[in-house]
Image (cartoon, rainbow, N blue to C red; front, side, top):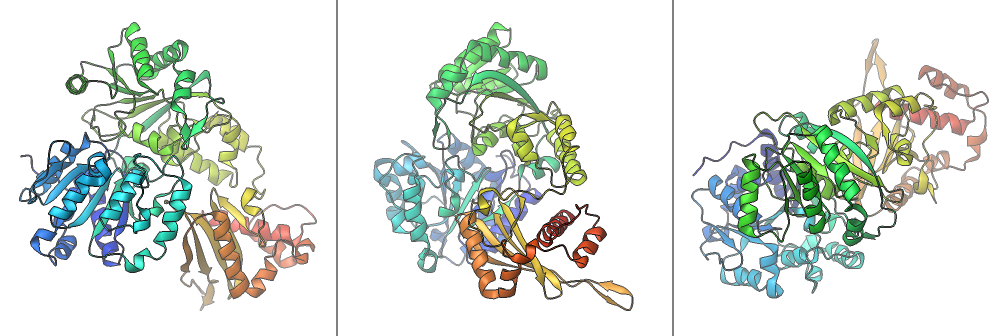
Length: 616
Protein backbone atom coordinates (compact mmCIF):
# COMPACT_ATOMS: atom_id res chain seq x y z
CA UNK A 1 0.00 0.00 0.00
CA UNK A 2 1.29 3.46 -0.90
CA UNK A 3 2.22 5.76 1.99
CA UNK A 4 -0.29 8.46 2.96
CA UNK A 5 0.50 11.78 1.28
CA UNK A 6 1.87 14.63 3.37
CA UNK A 7 -0.77 17.27 4.02
CA UNK A 8 -0.29 20.57 2.25
CA UNK A 9 -0.51 23.78 4.26
CA UNK A 10 -3.99 24.69 2.98
CA UNK A 11 -5.29 21.20 3.82
CA UNK A 12 -3.95 21.61 7.34
CA UNK A 13 -5.70 24.99 7.61
CA UNK A 14 -8.92 23.36 6.44
CA UNK A 15 -8.75 20.66 9.11
CA UNK A 16 -7.92 23.26 11.76
CA UNK A 17 -10.94 25.31 10.70
CA UNK A 18 -13.25 22.28 10.85
CA UNK A 19 -12.05 21.53 14.37
CA UNK A 20 -12.40 25.15 15.50
CA UNK A 21 -15.92 25.56 14.10
CA UNK A 22 -17.03 22.30 15.75
CA UNK A 23 -15.69 23.53 19.09
CA UNK A 24 -17.65 26.76 18.53
CA UNK A 25 -20.89 24.78 18.32
CA UNK A 26 -21.36 24.49 14.56
CA UNK A 27 -21.75 21.00 13.11
CA UNK A 28 -22.92 21.51 9.50
CA UNK A 29 -19.82 22.85 7.75
CA UNK A 30 -18.98 23.50 4.12
CA UNK A 31 -15.41 23.40 2.76
CA UNK A 32 -14.61 24.99 -0.61
CA UNK A 33 -11.48 23.81 -2.39
CA UNK A 34 -10.80 23.71 -6.14
CA UNK A 35 -10.82 20.57 -8.23
CA UNK A 36 -7.41 18.94 -8.09
CA UNK A 37 -6.32 20.23 -4.66
CA UNK A 38 -6.99 17.07 -2.67
CA UNK A 39 -10.39 17.39 -0.99
CA UNK A 40 -10.53 13.60 -0.52
CA UNK A 41 -7.04 13.52 0.95
CA UNK A 42 -8.07 16.18 3.46
CA UNK A 43 -11.22 14.51 4.74
CA UNK A 44 -9.40 11.15 4.80
CA UNK A 45 -7.19 12.69 7.52
CA UNK A 46 -10.09 13.91 9.66
CA UNK A 47 -10.36 10.82 11.87
CA UNK A 48 -6.79 11.22 13.10
CA UNK A 49 -6.63 15.03 13.30
CA UNK A 50 -5.70 15.59 16.99
CA UNK A 51 -8.60 17.71 18.21
CA UNK A 52 -11.19 15.82 16.16
CA UNK A 53 -9.71 12.50 17.31
CA UNK A 54 -9.92 13.66 20.94
CA UNK A 55 -13.58 14.55 20.43
CA UNK A 56 -14.31 11.16 18.82
CA UNK A 57 -12.63 9.37 21.72
CA UNK A 58 -15.27 10.74 24.08
CA UNK A 59 -17.67 8.24 22.47
CA UNK A 60 -17.57 4.41 22.74
CA UNK A 61 -15.12 2.87 20.28
CA UNK A 62 -17.82 1.41 18.02
CA UNK A 63 -19.60 4.77 17.82
CA UNK A 64 -16.89 6.75 16.02
CA UNK A 65 -17.79 5.76 12.48
CA UNK A 66 -17.65 7.85 9.33
CA UNK A 67 -20.03 7.80 6.36
CA UNK A 68 -18.89 9.28 3.05
CA UNK A 69 -21.65 10.08 0.55
CA UNK A 70 -20.50 10.43 -3.05
CA UNK A 71 -22.53 11.76 -5.95
CA UNK A 72 -21.33 9.25 -8.51
CA UNK A 73 -20.72 5.54 -8.12
CA UNK A 74 -17.41 5.91 -9.99
CA UNK A 75 -15.98 7.92 -7.07
CA UNK A 76 -16.52 5.26 -4.41
CA UNK A 77 -13.43 3.12 -5.00
CA UNK A 78 -11.22 6.20 -5.33
CA UNK A 79 -12.46 7.69 -2.05
CA UNK A 80 -12.29 4.37 -0.18
CA UNK A 81 -8.72 3.80 -1.35
CA UNK A 82 -7.48 7.21 -0.17
CA UNK A 83 -9.21 6.84 3.20
CA UNK A 84 -7.69 3.38 3.68
CA UNK A 85 -4.19 4.67 2.85
CA UNK A 86 -4.58 7.48 5.39
CA UNK A 87 -6.04 5.14 8.04
CA UNK A 88 -4.45 1.68 7.60
CA UNK A 89 -5.74 0.47 10.97
CA UNK A 90 -9.41 1.06 10.11
CA UNK A 91 -11.85 -1.11 8.16
CA UNK A 92 -13.10 0.81 5.10
CA UNK A 93 -16.05 -0.65 3.19
CA UNK A 94 -18.21 0.25 0.19
CA UNK A 95 -22.02 0.12 0.18
CA UNK A 96 -23.16 -0.05 -3.43
CA UNK A 97 -25.23 -2.39 -5.62
CA UNK A 98 -24.38 -5.96 -4.57
CA UNK A 99 -21.62 -4.79 -2.21
CA UNK A 100 -22.80 -4.57 1.40
CA UNK A 101 -20.64 -2.98 4.09
CA UNK A 102 -19.73 -5.05 7.11
CA UNK A 103 -21.40 -4.04 10.36
CA UNK A 104 -17.88 -3.81 11.80
CA UNK A 105 -16.71 -1.22 9.24
CA UNK A 106 -15.25 1.98 10.68
CA UNK A 107 -15.76 3.95 7.46
CA UNK A 108 -18.48 3.33 4.87
CA UNK A 109 -18.38 4.93 1.42
CA UNK A 110 -21.71 4.95 -0.43
CA UNK A 111 -23.34 6.66 -3.37
CA UNK A 112 -26.45 8.76 -2.86
CA UNK A 113 -28.15 6.60 -5.49
CA UNK A 114 -27.59 3.49 -3.35
CA UNK A 115 -28.64 5.12 -0.08
CA UNK A 116 -31.84 6.59 -1.52
CA UNK A 117 -33.00 3.51 -3.45
CA UNK A 118 -36.31 2.00 -2.34
CA UNK A 119 -37.28 4.95 -0.13
CA UNK A 120 -33.86 4.96 1.54
CA UNK A 121 -33.99 1.27 2.44
CA UNK A 122 -30.18 0.86 2.33
CA UNK A 123 -29.60 3.91 4.52
CA UNK A 124 -32.20 2.68 7.01
CA UNK A 125 -30.41 -0.70 7.19
CA UNK A 126 -27.11 1.03 7.96
CA UNK A 127 -28.72 3.12 10.69
CA UNK A 128 -30.79 0.37 12.33
CA UNK A 129 -28.34 -2.53 12.27
CA UNK A 130 -25.09 -0.70 13.02
CA UNK A 131 -23.75 1.83 15.54
CA UNK A 132 -24.43 5.51 14.68
CA UNK A 133 -22.34 7.59 12.31
CA UNK A 134 -20.40 10.29 14.14
CA UNK A 135 -18.93 12.01 11.07
CA UNK A 136 -20.66 12.34 7.71
CA UNK A 137 -18.87 13.64 4.62
CA UNK A 138 -20.80 14.83 1.56
CA UNK A 139 -18.50 14.88 -1.46
CA UNK A 140 -19.38 17.25 -4.33
CA UNK A 141 -21.57 19.04 -1.77
CA UNK A 142 -23.02 21.54 -4.24
CA UNK A 143 -25.61 18.78 -4.83
CA UNK A 144 -26.65 18.79 -1.17
CA UNK A 145 -29.70 21.05 -1.64
CA UNK A 146 -31.30 18.32 -3.79
CA UNK A 147 -34.19 16.35 -2.35
CA UNK A 148 -32.40 13.02 -1.98
CA UNK A 149 -29.50 14.55 -0.06
CA UNK A 150 -31.72 16.54 2.27
CA UNK A 151 -33.85 13.49 3.08
CA UNK A 152 -30.71 11.44 3.76
CA UNK A 153 -29.48 14.16 6.11
CA UNK A 154 -32.84 14.12 7.92
CA UNK A 155 -32.39 10.40 8.58
CA UNK A 156 -28.81 11.06 9.74
CA UNK A 157 -30.01 13.70 12.23
CA UNK A 158 -28.57 16.83 10.64
CA UNK A 159 -31.75 18.46 9.28
CA UNK A 160 -35.26 18.84 10.72
CA UNK A 161 -37.94 16.28 9.76
CA UNK A 162 -39.71 18.91 7.64
CA UNK A 163 -36.87 18.60 5.14
CA UNK A 164 -37.75 15.01 4.25
CA UNK A 165 -39.45 14.72 0.88
CA UNK A 166 -40.98 12.13 -1.38
CA UNK A 167 -39.04 13.50 -4.36
CA UNK A 168 -36.44 11.12 -5.77
CA UNK A 169 -34.69 13.21 -8.41
CA UNK A 170 -31.04 13.73 -7.55
CA UNK A 171 -31.28 17.39 -8.54
CA UNK A 172 -34.89 17.95 -7.51
CA UNK A 173 -35.21 21.21 -5.62
CA UNK A 174 -37.66 24.05 -5.93
CA UNK A 175 -38.09 27.37 -4.27
CA UNK A 176 -41.30 26.45 -2.42
CA UNK A 177 -39.63 23.35 -1.03
CA UNK A 178 -36.57 25.32 0.04
CA UNK A 179 -38.77 28.00 1.61
CA UNK A 180 -40.41 25.37 3.83
CA UNK A 181 -37.00 23.98 4.69
CA UNK A 182 -35.54 27.39 5.53
CA UNK A 183 -38.45 28.10 7.86
CA UNK A 184 -37.95 24.74 9.58
CA UNK A 185 -34.25 25.46 10.09
CA UNK A 186 -34.92 28.65 12.08
CA UNK A 187 -35.50 26.80 15.35
CA UNK A 188 -33.68 23.61 14.47
CA UNK A 189 -30.20 24.45 15.71
CA UNK A 190 -31.52 24.99 19.23
CA UNK A 191 -32.77 21.38 19.45
CA UNK A 192 -30.60 19.56 16.87
CA UNK A 193 -28.27 16.78 18.04
CA UNK A 194 -24.76 18.18 18.58
CA UNK A 195 -23.00 14.83 18.95
CA UNK A 196 -22.24 14.48 15.23
CA UNK A 197 -20.44 16.38 12.50
CA UNK A 198 -21.42 17.01 8.88
CA UNK A 199 -18.76 18.28 6.46
CA UNK A 200 -19.54 19.06 2.83
CA UNK A 201 -16.66 19.46 0.40
CA UNK A 202 -16.99 21.11 -3.00
CA UNK A 203 -15.09 23.14 -5.54
CA UNK A 204 -18.16 25.22 -6.34
CA UNK A 205 -20.73 26.07 -3.63
CA UNK A 206 -23.08 27.82 -6.08
CA UNK A 207 -25.86 25.86 -7.79
CA UNK A 208 -27.04 26.65 -11.31
CA UNK A 209 -30.65 26.87 -10.09
CA UNK A 210 -29.70 29.68 -7.64
CA UNK A 211 -30.86 27.66 -4.61
CA UNK A 212 -28.19 28.37 -2.03
CA UNK A 213 -26.55 25.79 0.20
CA UNK A 214 -27.43 27.80 3.29
CA UNK A 215 -30.50 25.54 3.51
CA UNK A 216 -28.15 22.69 4.47
CA UNK A 217 -24.90 24.12 5.86
CA UNK A 218 -24.45 26.69 8.61
CA UNK A 219 -21.25 28.26 7.33
CA UNK A 220 -18.35 27.97 4.91
CA UNK A 221 -15.75 26.84 7.41
CA UNK A 222 -12.84 27.12 5.01
CA UNK A 223 -12.36 28.55 1.53
CA UNK A 224 -9.28 27.97 -0.60
CA UNK A 225 -10.10 29.51 -3.95
CA UNK A 226 -8.89 28.53 -7.38
CA UNK A 227 -6.92 31.73 -7.91
CA UNK A 228 -4.94 31.13 -4.71
CA UNK A 229 -4.29 27.50 -5.67
CA UNK A 230 -2.87 28.60 -9.02
CA UNK A 231 -0.83 31.42 -7.50
CA UNK A 232 0.54 29.02 -4.86
CA UNK A 233 1.61 26.55 -7.53
CA UNK A 234 -0.76 23.69 -6.64
CA UNK A 235 -2.64 24.08 -9.93
CA UNK A 236 -1.25 25.13 -13.31
CA UNK A 237 -1.89 28.60 -14.81
CA UNK A 238 -4.77 29.02 -17.27
CA UNK A 239 -4.22 30.48 -20.74
CA UNK A 240 -7.66 31.32 -22.20
CA UNK A 241 -8.75 31.71 -25.81
CA UNK A 242 -12.19 32.82 -26.98
CA UNK A 243 -13.52 31.59 -30.31
CA UNK A 244 -16.71 33.32 -31.45
CA UNK A 245 -19.17 31.24 -33.46
CA UNK A 246 -22.26 32.13 -35.49
CA UNK A 247 -24.56 29.72 -33.64
CA UNK A 248 -27.58 31.50 -32.14
CA UNK A 249 -28.63 30.70 -28.55
CA UNK A 250 -31.27 33.34 -27.86
CA UNK A 251 -34.09 30.94 -28.74
CA UNK A 252 -32.78 28.23 -26.41
CA UNK A 253 -34.87 28.12 -23.25
CA UNK A 254 -33.52 27.97 -19.70
CA UNK A 255 -34.24 25.05 -17.36
CA UNK A 256 -33.08 24.93 -13.70
CA UNK A 257 -30.72 27.85 -14.25
CA UNK A 258 -28.96 26.50 -17.36
CA UNK A 259 -29.79 25.83 -20.98
CA UNK A 260 -32.39 23.27 -21.99
CA UNK A 261 -30.01 20.57 -23.14
CA UNK A 262 -32.10 19.20 -26.02
CA UNK A 263 -32.57 22.65 -27.55
CA UNK A 264 -28.93 23.53 -26.89
CA UNK A 265 -27.72 20.44 -28.72
CA UNK A 266 -29.82 21.33 -31.74
CA UNK A 267 -28.31 24.81 -31.78
CA UNK A 268 -24.62 23.92 -31.42
CA UNK A 269 -24.13 20.44 -32.87
CA UNK A 270 -23.51 21.59 -36.43
CA UNK A 271 -20.78 20.61 -38.86
CA UNK A 272 -19.66 24.24 -39.24
CA UNK A 273 -19.29 24.79 -35.48
CA UNK A 274 -17.57 21.43 -34.90
CA UNK A 275 -15.08 22.14 -37.70
CA UNK A 276 -14.40 25.56 -36.15
CA UNK A 277 -13.70 23.86 -32.81
CA UNK A 278 -11.14 21.57 -34.47
CA UNK A 279 -9.44 24.44 -36.32
CA UNK A 280 -9.25 26.49 -33.12
CA UNK A 281 -7.71 23.56 -31.27
CA UNK A 282 -5.14 23.14 -34.03
CA UNK A 283 -4.31 26.85 -33.77
CA UNK A 284 -4.05 27.14 -29.99
CA UNK A 285 -3.51 23.67 -28.51
CA UNK A 286 -2.35 21.17 -31.12
CA UNK A 287 -0.33 18.38 -29.52
CA UNK A 288 -1.87 18.81 -26.06
CA UNK A 289 -3.87 16.02 -24.43
CA UNK A 290 -7.37 17.44 -24.51
CA UNK A 291 -10.75 16.93 -22.88
CA UNK A 292 -13.64 18.40 -24.87
CA UNK A 293 -17.02 18.86 -23.18
CA UNK A 294 -20.13 18.45 -25.31
CA UNK A 295 -23.88 18.83 -24.84
CA UNK A 296 -25.07 15.28 -25.47
CA UNK A 297 -23.96 11.90 -26.77
CA UNK A 298 -24.60 12.75 -30.41
CA UNK A 299 -22.58 15.97 -30.03
CA UNK A 300 -19.67 14.02 -28.49
CA UNK A 301 -19.58 11.64 -31.45
CA UNK A 302 -19.99 14.41 -34.04
CA UNK A 303 -17.11 16.42 -32.58
CA UNK A 304 -14.88 13.33 -32.32
CA UNK A 305 -15.62 12.54 -35.98
CA UNK A 306 -14.64 16.13 -36.93
CA UNK A 307 -11.28 15.68 -35.16
CA UNK A 308 -10.71 12.32 -36.85
CA UNK A 309 -11.40 13.79 -40.29
CA UNK A 310 -8.57 16.24 -39.58
CA UNK A 311 -6.18 13.44 -38.70
CA UNK A 312 -6.43 13.78 -34.90
CA UNK A 313 -6.99 10.62 -32.86
CA UNK A 314 -10.15 11.47 -30.92
CA UNK A 315 -12.71 9.25 -29.18
CA UNK A 316 -16.17 9.93 -27.78
CA UNK A 317 -17.06 8.98 -24.21
CA UNK A 318 -20.52 9.00 -22.63
CA UNK A 319 -22.65 7.18 -20.12
CA UNK A 320 -23.48 4.75 -22.90
CA UNK A 321 -19.85 3.66 -23.22
CA UNK A 322 -19.40 0.12 -21.77
CA UNK A 323 -17.38 0.07 -18.55
CA UNK A 324 -14.44 -1.93 -19.90
CA UNK A 325 -14.28 0.18 -23.07
CA UNK A 326 -14.27 3.29 -20.92
CA UNK A 327 -11.42 2.02 -18.76
CA UNK A 328 -9.37 1.17 -21.84
CA UNK A 329 -10.06 4.57 -23.39
CA UNK A 330 -8.89 6.43 -20.29
CA UNK A 331 -5.80 4.19 -20.10
CA UNK A 332 -5.00 4.98 -23.75
CA UNK A 333 -5.47 8.68 -23.05
CA UNK A 334 -3.09 8.53 -20.07
CA UNK A 335 -0.57 6.66 -22.24
CA UNK A 336 -0.79 9.32 -24.96
CA UNK A 337 -2.33 6.94 -27.51
CA UNK A 338 -5.53 9.05 -27.73
CA UNK A 339 -5.08 12.80 -27.96
CA UNK A 340 -8.66 14.09 -27.58
CA UNK A 341 -11.60 12.72 -25.61
CA UNK A 342 -14.96 14.30 -26.34
CA UNK A 343 -17.33 13.57 -23.49
CA UNK A 344 -20.88 14.25 -22.42
CA UNK A 345 -21.17 14.88 -18.65
CA UNK A 346 -18.93 11.93 -17.73
CA UNK A 347 -15.68 13.64 -16.81
CA UNK A 348 -17.10 16.63 -14.92
CA UNK A 349 -16.53 15.16 -11.44
CA UNK A 350 -13.99 12.91 -9.78
CA UNK A 351 -11.79 12.06 -12.76
CA UNK A 352 -8.02 12.28 -12.28
CA UNK A 353 -6.31 12.87 -15.64
CA UNK A 354 -3.41 15.18 -14.69
CA UNK A 355 -1.65 15.17 -18.07
CA UNK A 356 -4.63 17.02 -19.61
CA UNK A 357 -3.18 20.18 -21.13
CA UNK A 358 -6.26 21.63 -22.83
CA UNK A 359 -9.96 21.97 -22.01
CA UNK A 360 -12.20 22.62 -25.00
CA UNK A 361 -15.60 24.01 -24.00
CA UNK A 362 -17.84 23.00 -26.89
CA UNK A 363 -20.80 22.96 -24.46
CA UNK A 364 -22.00 26.49 -23.61
CA UNK A 365 -23.20 26.90 -20.04
CA UNK A 366 -24.61 29.63 -17.80
CA UNK A 367 -23.59 27.69 -14.69
CA UNK A 368 -20.41 28.87 -12.96
CA UNK A 369 -20.47 25.62 -10.96
CA UNK A 370 -20.47 23.37 -14.02
CA UNK A 371 -17.94 25.53 -15.83
CA UNK A 372 -15.42 25.35 -12.98
CA UNK A 373 -15.93 21.60 -12.65
CA UNK A 374 -15.21 21.05 -16.35
CA UNK A 375 -12.21 23.37 -16.44
CA UNK A 376 -10.80 21.88 -13.25
CA UNK A 377 -10.17 18.62 -15.09
CA UNK A 378 -7.19 20.26 -16.77
CA UNK A 379 -5.58 22.13 -13.89
CA UNK A 380 -3.78 19.38 -11.96
CA UNK A 381 -0.01 19.66 -11.91
CA UNK A 382 1.99 17.07 -13.89
CA UNK A 383 5.68 16.70 -14.77
CA UNK A 384 6.52 18.95 -17.72
CA UNK A 385 3.12 20.65 -17.69
CA UNK A 386 3.35 24.45 -17.43
CA UNK A 387 -0.19 25.61 -18.25
CA UNK A 388 -3.68 24.57 -19.25
CA UNK A 389 -5.03 26.05 -22.47
CA UNK A 390 -8.77 26.72 -22.18
CA UNK A 391 -10.68 27.27 -25.42
CA UNK A 392 -14.19 28.70 -25.06
CA UNK A 393 -16.54 28.46 -28.03
CA UNK A 394 -18.72 31.52 -27.51
CA UNK A 395 -21.99 31.65 -29.40
CA UNK A 396 -24.31 34.55 -30.16
CA UNK A 397 -26.32 34.94 -26.94
CA UNK A 398 -27.65 38.42 -26.26
CA UNK A 399 -30.23 37.08 -23.78
CA UNK A 400 -27.82 34.82 -21.89
CA UNK A 401 -24.59 35.28 -19.96
CA UNK A 402 -22.14 32.55 -20.96
CA UNK A 403 -19.42 31.38 -18.61
CA UNK A 404 -15.85 31.73 -19.87
CA UNK A 405 -12.39 31.29 -18.33
CA UNK A 406 -12.01 34.80 -16.78
CA UNK A 407 -14.78 34.06 -14.23
CA UNK A 408 -12.42 31.56 -12.57
CA UNK A 409 -10.30 34.51 -11.44
CA UNK A 410 -13.25 36.68 -10.50
CA UNK A 411 -12.99 38.58 -13.78
CA UNK A 412 -15.93 39.52 -16.03
CA UNK A 413 -16.94 36.70 -18.43
CA UNK A 414 -17.04 39.12 -21.37
CA UNK A 415 -13.27 39.62 -21.25
CA UNK A 416 -11.40 38.14 -24.21
CA UNK A 417 -8.04 36.98 -22.87
CA UNK A 418 -6.44 36.45 -26.29
CA UNK A 419 -3.81 34.08 -24.93
CA UNK A 420 -2.77 36.06 -21.85
CA UNK A 421 -2.82 34.00 -18.66
CA UNK A 422 -5.58 34.75 -16.18
CA UNK A 423 -3.00 36.10 -13.73
CA UNK A 424 -1.71 38.53 -16.37
CA UNK A 425 -5.28 39.64 -17.06
CA UNK A 426 -6.09 40.03 -13.35
CA UNK A 427 -2.96 42.10 -12.72
CA UNK A 428 -3.65 44.30 -15.75
CA UNK A 429 -7.28 44.91 -14.71
CA UNK A 430 -6.21 45.73 -11.16
CA UNK A 431 -3.80 48.30 -12.56
CA UNK A 432 -6.60 49.66 -14.75
CA UNK A 433 -8.91 49.97 -11.73
CA UNK A 434 -6.21 51.87 -9.83
CA UNK A 435 -5.59 54.17 -12.78
CA UNK A 436 -9.25 54.74 -13.59
CA UNK A 437 -11.16 54.13 -10.33
CA UNK A 438 -14.89 53.78 -10.75
CA UNK A 439 -14.69 52.49 -14.32
CA UNK A 440 -17.38 49.79 -14.43
CA UNK A 441 -15.69 46.85 -16.12
CA UNK A 442 -18.78 44.66 -15.89
CA UNK A 443 -20.96 47.27 -17.55
CA UNK A 444 -18.41 47.87 -20.30
CA UNK A 445 -18.24 44.13 -21.03
CA UNK A 446 -21.98 43.52 -20.78
CA UNK A 447 -22.71 45.00 -24.19
CA UNK A 448 -19.85 43.36 -26.11
CA UNK A 449 -16.88 41.03 -25.67
CA UNK A 450 -13.69 43.11 -25.39
CA UNK A 451 -9.98 42.46 -25.13
CA UNK A 452 -7.81 44.06 -22.47
CA UNK A 453 -6.51 46.59 -25.00
CA UNK A 454 -10.06 47.57 -26.02
CA UNK A 455 -11.01 48.04 -22.36
CA UNK A 456 -8.03 50.29 -21.81
CA UNK A 457 -9.08 52.48 -24.73
CA UNK A 458 -12.63 52.83 -23.36
CA UNK A 459 -11.32 53.63 -19.88
CA UNK A 460 -9.44 56.65 -21.25
CA UNK A 461 -12.75 58.40 -21.99
CA UNK A 462 -14.40 57.51 -18.69
CA UNK A 463 -15.24 60.14 -16.06
CA UNK A 464 -13.61 58.65 -12.98
CA UNK A 465 -15.73 60.73 -10.62
CA UNK A 466 -19.15 59.62 -11.83
CA UNK A 467 -21.04 57.98 -8.97
CA UNK A 468 -22.07 54.36 -9.76
CA UNK A 469 -25.81 53.75 -10.15
CA UNK A 470 -27.50 51.69 -7.44
CA UNK A 471 -29.72 49.94 -9.97
CA UNK A 472 -32.62 47.93 -8.53
CA UNK A 473 -31.06 48.12 -5.05
CA UNK A 474 -31.93 51.83 -4.90
CA UNK A 475 -35.67 51.25 -5.32
CA UNK A 476 -37.49 52.11 -2.12
CA UNK A 477 -34.34 53.05 -0.19
CA UNK A 478 -34.76 55.85 2.35
CA UNK A 479 -31.04 56.52 2.81
CA UNK A 480 -28.27 57.57 0.46
CA UNK A 481 -26.34 54.34 -0.25
CA UNK A 482 -23.34 53.90 -2.53
CA UNK A 483 -22.57 50.90 -4.74
CA UNK A 484 -19.09 49.53 -4.02
CA UNK A 485 -19.14 46.56 -6.39
CA UNK A 486 -21.58 43.90 -7.54
CA UNK A 487 -23.79 42.86 -4.59
CA UNK A 488 -21.96 45.20 -2.18
CA UNK A 489 -23.36 48.53 -0.94
CA UNK A 490 -22.19 51.01 1.69
CA UNK A 491 -23.60 53.86 3.74
CA UNK A 492 -21.02 56.22 5.33
CA UNK A 493 -21.59 59.03 7.83
CA UNK A 494 -19.65 60.99 10.49
CA UNK A 495 -19.72 59.46 13.98
CA UNK A 496 -17.74 60.05 17.19
CA UNK A 497 -15.01 62.24 15.66
CA UNK A 498 -14.53 59.71 12.88
CA UNK A 499 -16.91 58.04 10.51
CA UNK A 500 -18.96 54.88 10.46
CA UNK A 501 -19.72 52.57 7.55
CA UNK A 502 -22.77 50.37 7.24
CA UNK A 503 -22.35 47.70 4.56
CA UNK A 504 -24.57 45.17 2.84
CA UNK A 505 -22.59 42.44 1.06
CA UNK A 506 -23.31 39.03 -0.46
CA UNK A 507 -21.61 36.01 1.10
CA UNK A 508 -20.48 32.78 -0.57
CA UNK A 509 -23.67 30.93 0.31
CA UNK A 510 -25.70 33.46 -1.68
CA UNK A 511 -27.02 35.29 1.40
CA UNK A 512 -26.39 38.88 2.51
CA UNK A 513 -24.65 40.17 5.63
CA UNK A 514 -25.04 43.57 7.30
CA UNK A 515 -21.84 44.80 8.95
CA UNK A 516 -20.90 47.97 10.83
CA UNK A 517 -17.41 49.48 10.87
CA UNK A 518 -16.31 52.45 13.01
CA UNK A 519 -13.16 54.22 11.82
CA UNK A 520 -12.07 56.70 14.55
CA UNK A 521 -10.30 59.87 13.47
CA UNK A 522 -6.53 60.03 13.86
CA UNK A 523 -5.20 62.15 16.74
CA UNK A 524 -1.92 63.99 17.20
CA UNK A 525 0.01 63.61 20.46
CA UNK A 526 3.38 65.37 20.88
CA UNK A 527 3.62 65.79 17.15
CA UNK A 528 3.00 62.08 16.50
CA UNK A 529 -0.06 60.88 14.61
CA UNK A 530 -1.87 58.11 16.44
CA UNK A 531 -4.53 55.87 14.91
CA UNK A 532 -7.26 54.25 16.96
CA UNK A 533 -8.17 50.65 16.11
CA UNK A 534 -10.99 50.08 13.65
CA UNK A 535 -13.97 48.38 15.29
CA UNK A 536 -16.26 46.09 13.31
CA UNK A 537 -19.27 43.93 14.07
CA UNK A 538 -21.97 42.05 12.20
CA UNK A 539 -25.52 43.30 12.66
CA UNK A 540 -27.21 40.56 10.65
CA UNK A 541 -26.11 37.54 8.63
CA UNK A 542 -27.64 35.05 6.22
CA UNK A 543 -30.31 37.44 4.93
CA UNK A 544 -32.05 36.09 1.82
CA UNK A 545 -32.00 39.23 -0.39
CA UNK A 546 -30.08 42.50 -0.66
CA UNK A 547 -33.35 44.42 -0.35
CA UNK A 548 -34.23 42.68 2.93
CA UNK A 549 -30.70 43.25 4.27
CA UNK A 550 -30.88 46.95 3.35
CA UNK A 551 -34.22 47.18 5.15
CA UNK A 552 -32.65 45.74 8.31
CA UNK A 553 -29.73 48.17 8.00
CA UNK A 554 -31.97 51.20 7.55
CA UNK A 555 -34.19 50.15 10.47
CA UNK A 556 -31.06 49.95 12.64
CA UNK A 557 -30.01 53.46 11.59
CA UNK A 558 -33.48 54.83 12.37
CA UNK A 559 -33.39 53.22 15.82
CA UNK A 560 -29.74 53.76 16.79
CA UNK A 561 -28.55 56.71 14.69
CA UNK A 562 -31.52 59.05 14.44
CA UNK A 563 -29.44 62.13 13.68
CA UNK A 564 -27.68 60.17 10.93
CA UNK A 565 -31.01 59.12 9.43
CA UNK A 566 -31.85 62.77 8.85
CA UNK A 567 -28.37 63.51 7.57
CA UNK A 568 -28.29 60.61 5.09
CA UNK A 569 -31.92 60.84 3.94
CA UNK A 570 -31.54 60.71 0.17
CA UNK A 571 -34.20 63.41 -0.23
CA UNK A 572 -32.99 65.67 2.59
CA UNK A 573 -33.27 69.43 1.75
CA UNK A 574 -29.65 70.12 2.76
CA UNK A 575 -28.43 68.10 -0.21
CA UNK A 576 -29.55 70.85 -2.58
CA UNK A 577 -27.65 73.61 -0.76
CA UNK A 578 -24.26 74.79 -2.09
CA UNK A 579 -21.30 72.70 -1.01
CA UNK A 580 -19.79 73.93 2.25
CA UNK A 581 -16.25 75.37 2.49
CA UNK A 582 -15.30 72.36 4.62
CA UNK A 583 -16.48 69.97 1.89
CA UNK A 584 -14.62 71.93 -0.81
CA UNK A 585 -11.43 71.90 1.27
CA UNK A 586 -11.71 68.14 1.82
CA UNK A 587 -12.29 67.47 -1.89
CA UNK A 588 -9.22 69.54 -2.72
CA UNK A 589 -7.16 67.69 -0.12
CA UNK A 590 -8.34 64.37 -1.59
CA UNK A 591 -7.50 65.67 -5.09
CA UNK A 592 -11.03 65.08 -6.33
CA UNK A 593 -12.01 67.19 -9.37
CA UNK A 594 -15.46 68.78 -9.11
CA UNK A 595 -17.65 71.05 -11.19
CA UNK A 596 -18.53 74.62 -10.23
CA UNK A 597 -21.67 75.21 -8.16
CA UNK A 598 -21.45 71.78 -6.54
CA UNK A 599 -24.30 70.90 -4.14
CA UNK A 600 -23.75 69.53 -0.65
CA UNK A 601 -25.28 66.21 -1.69
CA UNK A 602 -22.99 65.88 -4.71
CA UNK A 603 -19.97 66.82 -2.62
CA UNK A 604 -20.93 64.24 0.00
CA UNK A 605 -21.16 61.52 -2.68
CA UNK A 606 -17.76 62.45 -4.13
CA UNK A 607 -16.17 62.32 -0.67
CA UNK A 608 -17.68 58.87 -0.05
CA UNK A 609 -16.43 57.70 -3.45
CA UNK A 610 -12.92 58.96 -2.70
CA UNK A 611 -12.92 57.08 0.62
CA UNK A 612 -14.00 53.88 -1.12
CA UNK A 613 -11.17 54.18 -3.63
CA UNK A 614 -8.64 54.98 -0.93
CA UNK A 615 -9.78 51.84 0.95
CA UNK A 616 -9.26 49.79 -2.20
